[in-house]
Length: 492
Picture 1 (cartoon, rainbow, N blue to C red):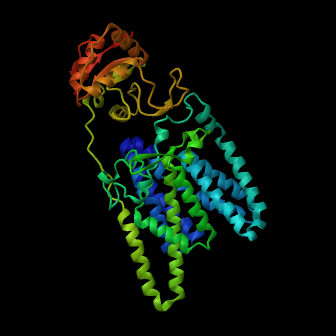
Picture 2: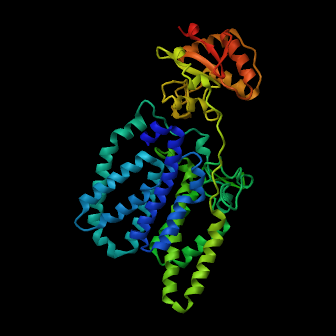
Picture 3: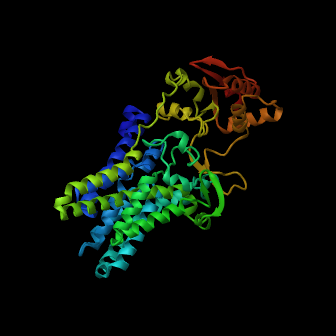
């Protein structure tokens, strides 16, 4: 996406990545379903479309392009199936290693779930079909090559991620509490045709994590399909896998209809294990989406076979199939993602008026400092191609404060001044400013290497302006659409 970013900006790159990622996901699933798993175009189209545009995928499309870009997952399945090809264990193992590495750089959570899913299905096949065991040696040889090659290629990146200077020891307790409400499995997502924000609120932690909203008709249909196709070991393995992921997604305590039940869930025994302590529990439910897509494809293919077997009733069978699918899938059809017009970037940024203040490696401090709720300064910096450095930001990094054990934190660890400003922003009132507050403000501005503090138009701007003036003793100047405090005399 680098050329798109440089030519058209970050927002365009984000939207292109998001849109093409979903299209590529549907295309890759169609390829694998039609050529490898099912072998028929119609059922493959049905399954691939659900895998790419199910409610969970649309939910994540609000913010997570790397999660909705799952086009490598079907390629991993394809290359894993090909490991059993006679005489090509080395080539197939290396090809599998390459797609594993590719997915690792897109999203490791998805890679972990894919590996678990493939493991369950392969073990089920090996136990249920003795004829396949004769190809076990070739399969295991290729798998060993894939494991060794991917381990070599990923050794340094994974070392940096898990042990490097920016590494963290698991997610925060709050994020690890992002679990699936049991009632959400039969509810509709806010961006589904049958859903809305009011009915979905509270069943998921936020609009980007509605991973399990399938609705009663689809849940009943999938249960019926599993029963109908119960002689197919792959279907039974997929069903067991779906139940496993659903149970894991419940988190440490089962919740039902927005209320805790007090009943512990199995995840409570697993959430502190290495690697698993960095998984958001509710995202296990995200892995149910491709399982349902596969089951829909297998079911449609079976219906097609039945129609071919009974040509006299072909029209009735097709009509019944289409009717049942419509009843289950029309309510979960996606609606357009919500959009809003962003506030214009201040002229102070677009004109380059910030440059003299930031000479010599200084940074810009914004009021409030950027976080999960106020990301405008990140957009401003991106519009300057990061030539305008800003203090703090929105990212996952280790909490380096004493006693925090480097647990993941959204943004940098708080400083006294960032906390003071956040309090003013929430309350709209300025607490009494003490000499200690002023001393801490100078220390923090020096820590941030601040050249200027700016305040753009926003709610409670008057309180924020009063607070920073009291902290620094400097009267701001209104220029380029923002209030500017020249703090270079304070920071040296």
